[in-house]
Image (cartoon, rainbow, N blue to C red; front, side):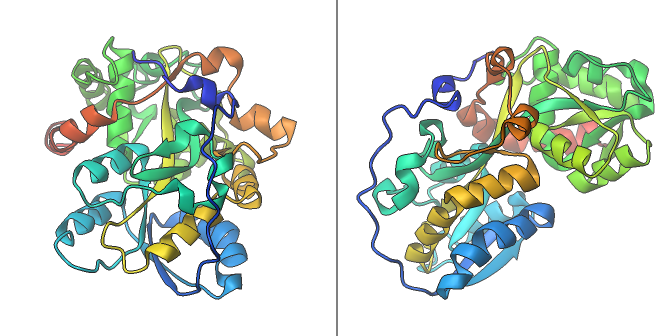
Amino acid sequence: MRHLTRRNALLGAAGLPLLARGAAAQPAGRVVVGTWGGDYARLLRKNVEEPFLVSKGFEVVQDQAGDAPRRAKMVAERRLPRGTVDIQGLSAANIYEMGEAGVAEPIDYGRLKNAANLIPAMRYQFGVGHIYSGKVVLFNPKLVEAPRGFRDCLDPKHGSKIGIIDIQYQFVMVAAALAAGGSVSNIEPGKALLLEAKKAGARVYPTNEAFAQAMKTEEIGLGLMWKARGVQWQNADIPVQLVAPVEGIPMYVSGFSIQRNAPNKAGAYAYMDAMLERQAQEAFAVDMGFNPTVTNAVVAPDLQARIGFTEAERARLVDLDYAYLAKENSAMKEWWDKVFKG
């Protein structure tokens, strides 16, 4: 296991943040944002776009789709002088992948006035971290005993009480690998564990929302999910409790990249600055249960206790191997679709 190499930054240390040169006021214009739909799109509209962009005269258009088709579109448009999207919402793993593919713009942090407050670990060459959490085990104590981690969660004894989310195949495979003695750089050991769970009756749900509904109706009793989502579902009275897995807690960072041939790069930088505003970050912590990526955000102690991680849990945070995931993603998806789901 490759433990989080930037852990000190995530513990709240500001490190030595780069000082933004101070961006001039951005002209209003049309900004096209590639994003997932559902709650995230709604909260981007509520907490970022309307208060910090629309109010200043920007027209913000959301291009909602899963990350796979949006990434495919970025690659397909690479030879066009102007793409159709300015800024794309992606996981940190996919930010790396799009940078390697040559379709994402290197970030000029001097153009972001809020860069001085950004946690150093959330500065990527081809993107900026918006929010972060970690993969934990969710369970219903009425239906199953409290698991200790990923291996307990995927134990075939739970049969059809196990829920697995299709769109999170990368992170499910990483979690299974950690449970089976593999690592973030070697997912092979986890495949047998997943196949055993599937053979025992584990159910696969297409989306996070479908998984949540199954937990609510008690169709399933446990599964893998971001801690932030678990907190959000607790707030919605879905009967789940959360366990930080003993095998390690894979990090999840959701951020944004600027398309290299974006029609409105100035607008894309304005969008990034808006998402890093203290009030927007604090609102996402309240509304979605994700941790802020800026050091000046203030989260109430009771909320921080629910969405954050204890000192012992932070020691188990695991940074993903983004280069490995980018290299293996196609093979992982093929195995997932043809072998695991097939």
